[in-house]
Image 1 (cartoon, chains in turn orange, purple):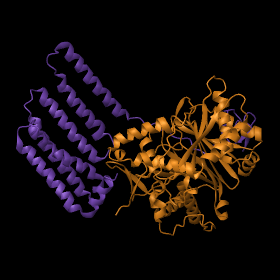
Image 2 (cartoon, helix red, strand yellow):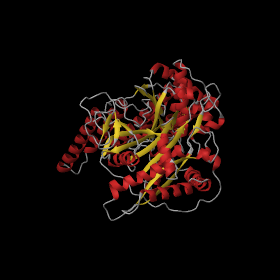
Image 3 (tube, chains in turn cyan, orange):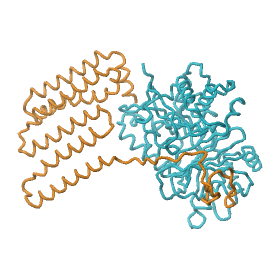
Image 4 (cartoon, chains in turn blue, red):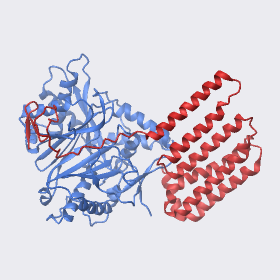
Length: 418
Length: 219
C-alpha cells in the first residue's frame, strides 16, 4: 500500500504559489575536499531515501487539496547542469520533488519547499554525506547528531507540527506595514554569490556589538540596501528583512517536514542613522519577536486560513487563486529581502575532516529578487545571495562593508562567470 | 589561485571579481565551483508555436473574408471549429507530454464541442447530441477502461480521468431531461454503460479504491 501524506500548512502555500519566477526550491550543498564519485553518491542516496520515506514523494491531485504520495521510482543523482534553485519539473526527476546533483567537489540537494524546510534538508544532507563517506570506505564514525540509517522511520518525523501546536486563542488583528521593495532588471536565471569567511571572527564581531550573528548581518544588510537604493530620495520607507525562525527550538518537535515561522524586522533609515543604532534596534526587535507567545500567534494565523470551514470545501483552483493573492499582497509586500540562518552545523569530527564548507541558497522571487542565506560548518561561514536581477549593487556593498569596516578576509565566488 | 580585488577588498579564484566584474587575472581558468549551464529557457516548442500561428492565421483570415463578402451566412464557423480541434489534436494530443488520460478526456470534450458547433451551424438537426456525443463518451470510457486493465499497476493515475468519464457519461441523459435532446436510447445506453463502469470500479478494485477516494477528497 502506498503511503500518503497531507501537505503541511507551509507546504500547501508553497505548492500554490510556485511558478517559473518563484521556484520554491532551495539548495543545500556540501563542498567536499575531494571530487565527488557519482556511483557512491547514488548508493548513498538509495540508502538514505529508504530510511527517510517522507522525502521520497510525488505530488498527486485531489479535489480539495493536493497531497504527497510515496514514490517508488528511482531518484538518480546527476551532474549539475542547471542554475541553482531552478524549478523542479517532475517529468525530469521521475516525479520526485527534489534533486541531488554533483559538480567537482560539491554534493548539492535541492528541495521543493512543500516537502521540507531547512532543518529537514540539513538532516537529509548530513545523512547523505555520512552514507556517501561510508560507501567510499572512509573511516567515519556514527554520532547521535545524525539520523541512524538502520533505524525504522519514526512517526514523529512525518508529523505536521503546525497542527499539533495550534491553539484556540484568537489571533490579534494587526496589519503589518509594507516595506521598501528591491527592483531591478530581470534575468532568466538565478545568480548565486557566495562569500566565505571565518565563523569565529563574525561571531566575535557580533558579540562585540552585544548581539547575534543573524541580527548583525541583517543590520548590515539594511544599511547596504539604504546606501544603494534609498539614500537619495525624499520618501524613506521602512526596510524590512524577513527572517525564518525554526519553530522546533520553541515548540519541541522531531518533524522533518516544514515547521518554521517568519518574523519581519526592520526600520526606516535616514542620513543620520548610524550602524550602531540599526544593530541595537534590530537586536531588540528580534528578541521581542522570537518568543514563544508571538510565534504561537503566527502558528494560529497560518493554520486559521487552512482550517476555516468555508476555505476547506472550495475547489482547489479557486483556493489557489486566493492563496496567491494573499501571498503577493501580504507576505511578499512586507519585506525587502529574506535572510535565513541555518546556523552552525554539528557534525561528528570524523566527518568534518572530509568537508570543506557548506552552502545554502534560497530561491529569489519576483517581488523579493535578492535573497540571502547562511550556514556554517567548522570555522567556515558561507553567506550566499541569490538574485534574479542584473544589479549586484546591494550584494557588492554588503561584502565590501564587511571586509573594509571589519577587516574580514572574505573569499567570494559565483556562478556568474562573465 | 586566489586573486585579490582591491576594489572590493575580497579574494576570489575567478578571473573576474564576482562583485564588481573587474578583471583580476589574464588567465581564463575553469570555475572551480560552478559549471557553465546549457541555458534552457523553457518555451513552447517551435512546432507548437508554428501550429498556433497557422491556426490564428486561418481563423482570422476566414472571419475577415466572411464578414466582408457575405455577413448574412456565418460560414467561418465551419472553419473555426475544425481548426481549433486540429490545434488541440496537434499541440496537446500529439506534441505534448501530458498524461494519456487527460489527452483522452480533452479529445472527447473537443470533438463533442466541434461536432456540436458544426451541427448547430448546419441547421441544427441535433444529430450530434442525439447520437454522436453519447457514443463518443462510451467509446472513450471503454478506451480508458482498456488502458487501466492493460496497466493495472497504474490504475491510481487514471482514477481521476475515469471518474471524469463516468460523470461525462451521465451528461447525455441530463441533456435529454432538460429536453435539449429528444432521442432517449443512445443517452440511456451511455448512462447505463457509465453506471456499469462505476460499479465495476467499486467491485473489482477492493480496499485500495476506498483509500484512494479518501486521499483525493481529504479536506
